[in-house]
Length: 139
Length: 139
Length: 139
Image (cartoon, rainbow over all chains, first blue to last red; front, side, top):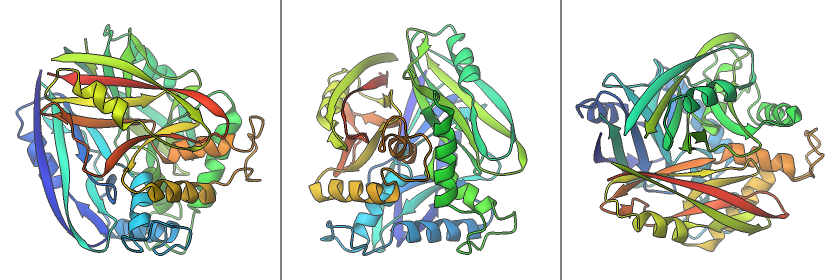
């Protein structure tokens, strides 16, 4: 049994879903492992992770439209406003999505479904530098 | 340390929570492992996984009522409508619940709480064939 | 490769986010392991787990305000009312947050981001005794 770790840096340019499937898949599938478990962990609370459909780009547009309506920027409900009107909504959006994902590795391939992609969901409007830790265990 | 993998197929017949606790538990607890980590991974973006109360069936009815109100079918907000009025809501419901679950195995038993069940949450109205990958590591 | 397991008990005193970062970190970082994967699993369906900002306490207040508005107690939508007006909302809040979390261990330290804390989110108003299972695998 072996473990491998790595890190992905994503330079985000505002609120949206960033497809990180290629980098993640390339790293996991070049590990030399056949069977294992990949875990992604994002070290932030205003950006998150999501498995989502990666075929029709409209799905990403609609996903953002939904979260934008559910957790509106500048909501007068919030008292934590010192970091801007999109900061507390970013924390709520993170809570409603994922800080970590685990995906099995089978026969050297990530077990993603046919229409699944792995996304980093940036919830802030400002550009940011986001870090995702990758951990793989298997043999 | 060992790994074992398997796959569950669930033939769904419309939107609801399907209890998969018996199959998952039977597989994990017949693995011969004493201590480990079980991961379930669903290869879809319009069906998801959820740990939920499995005692009173009304909880499942109410859970569905909540998601139905929060993410209504045919919402005019959505532009991805080509696959039907329940498809984009299905992607949003998946994003709000889980694509994977991890549950420890202790003394040969899954560490589920007394009232916890493992559910596949089908979000489409049409019948589907859903696949869940099981990965177990331990000894 | 080794595995270690433990259990945390949290005596909650009503609905709020309880910071369990110190206990979790202390246990994982005294394990003697350098690289690994920590999984937390809560054995309940009316309390959950969440990674959240742990710097400004107002974030916790706002998070609760958001969930309180999204899933109001005593909502006439719900038929599962036998355990009180906050019980079904507690199940929904659990479904919208996490029953398990996985966090990599790197160089003997949990890979939490600078502003991240690990919280047990109690969703019931009554005092409870909550159990979180810890599972660590690595070497």
